[in-house]
Image: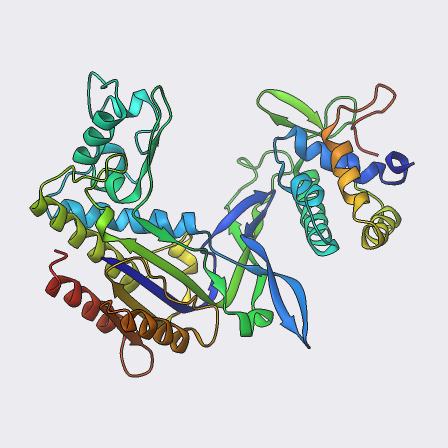
Length: 315
Length: 118
């Protein structure tokens, strides 16, 4: 089973993905973007959130859901440090002595940690072992039709320190000013989850875990996605720049084999997704689609998709 | 000669390379059209000004920043004429951007004083 979600969310004055700081200036991530204006394509720079940032948030939610379901999560991942068994030092915490063949290494890691099972890993030693992530996430980018209205603007903030004559040293200032570049846009991103890859070896394509364990892990992966979208707990600087806005539209499709919803950066993404699914249905393939907009809230659409997957026996 | 025409920009980009920030030089060197060069240069200048404002000055009166225990001299800010000429030239020939980025990645010639402010 394959789940694909397209999300549109409005975020005003957000600092969800900051990149580097230079002196007192913290920059928002920005990407070049092709937009059409008067029949011509032009490049504009727009605020964006990286897929890596969204993936990190998803995996943090996955940790919580897995632990609450009594599933194993390694110590590194429990701390939100997703080293993913990248070398001997980290792998030894899971299996010691380290096996000498890739199949046994993958099996040991998958059994020991749900996050590395669902989120993949790269053990960069001899022999190297790589497991692709069962979930995929795009960058969050401004919706095409309104991308030209997206802004990234620096906001001035100040931090004060009380200083009397005795504590003041040199020409130290009592006031430190700094700029935080904030983004404002209607963003869209896509999230895919290949449930068939959970608990299954990337080397042999055979299950590593028993069916019951696989189903529990699939359920935890779905709940993590639900929680991430429902709580808006993704991105950085939430403590003082929690985005003003929320999910405006969401489309979720569940299919037997991989199918990705049309990207929500296009205005007609819902219609296009429906049409594409109809073609699949004409081949006799079953599918599910739920759309959240004005009538349905995102949680309802996601819940319907999860219920559908449950009925289909995915978990 | 490009190195003298855009010497200030090359020195500024080289400073970022020395501080292991390859972002600007990569974006300028790999740009396929003028827009990314303009944005990268704007961001580089903004960051460079911030760095200069808080850079300490050594006993010889030179600005520097410390990175991994090394003192890296902070060069001067490129002049507005130089920036304008560079951007005009990039709009007519993208090869100029690639050449400037390549020079910034090379070792400075022995004659050149690679930093120390104006």
